[in-house]
Length: 229
Image 1 (cartoon, rainbow, N blue to C red):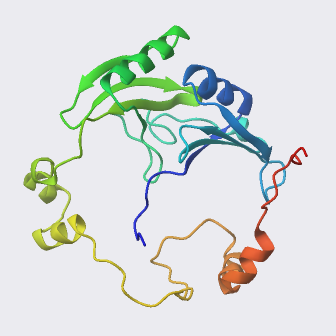
Image 2: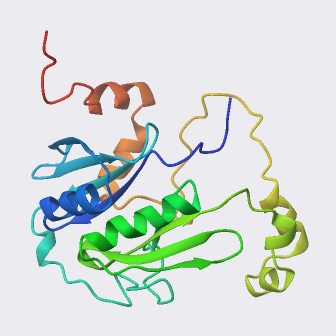
């Protein structure tokens, strides 16, 4: 039983115009559209999924009036892989290619749609190409021939810059497994922990609901289109 993520199930990006994003990630990036439905429990929301492989998807969310929210480079978006954006925002997204040949094929496909692509650039641990997506997305495709050896790629000088001491570095390189009981009850609300942005009263009520009741009451398991006999 694994206690760490096995990969990415889906990445979700906001869109003011979901069709524009679907067209880009389908036609330019080659990801087939596999789901498009009213977003579960979110009035006015649309939710799309495009397949990267049998385990990973690219997701797009459209909500009312998102197109009226301004994009501010340096705040909401970085604009390229070397520029800042607000803490907690996605600075850039790197897709994976299996081989250098696949990376070049991706570059050629993207360029064939009139989208400029920079690279490949060799970073030692991977080779990458860089380009932009809809709504100022900063995108990358990267490929690596093997895993990353932490003995070569964790720089002691940069650990110091990050404020990580030797003991912390050892913990971070080998996270301790959880060996306690299951299920673990919902912990008490603590202001210093990360929290989702719900109204506090509603959020506390959600946290007080037993897991089984929340699963039963908030799940949407049926697809929107009935299966053909």
